[in-house]
Length: 125
Image 1 (cartoon, rainbow, N blue to C red):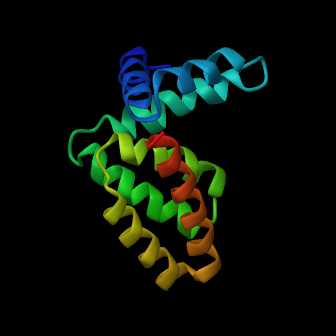
Image 2: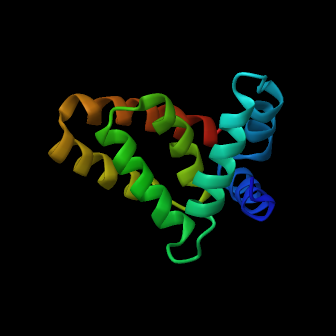
Image 3: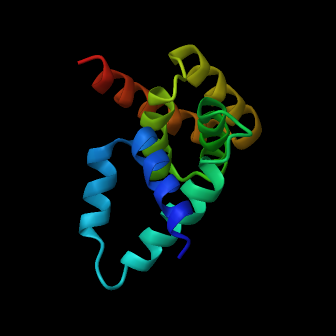
């Protein structure tokens, strides 16, 4: 493991998804899942997200588009929260979901809208 990439990844992961969420996932990791959690933190978040070329807000927008296209709604919800943390507005979420609907199908867009509404309602409480 590259400790520098892991540390960068951990910081970026916590900044986007929240310290509580990330810490809970790492503490829940066991013999089966810990190597994956470490690799994901190092590779996805350290190598991918911590690269300064694309700002976190834009990465979040790209992520939502790709996850919507793949119909990975559990991950879409997590990254919807992260996107809002990274500055994605409700109007931008709406536009992203419109593109998902156009290119990936109405059912995917309907699922994304349901999740976005839930996440926005949580944020507004």
